Image (tube, rainbow, N blue to C red; front, side, top):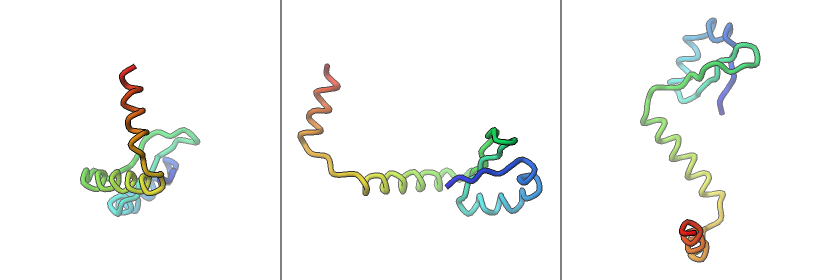
Length: 79
């Protein structure tokens, strides 16, 4: 889950935030209540793995798709 950090707190605790980002956390830096920037790791592999895990989690919560539904979707795309 993304945490919101105020600018002053980010400046004071930047080294700690960077350690936490390297561990997989991400942060939104806000000025007041306005989000300004996102602090995330540069590791693209970690981002891909996170996206894959999110998709797996979503699929686990979803009901299986039937052949009839797939055929209906194909027909919708042809109209």
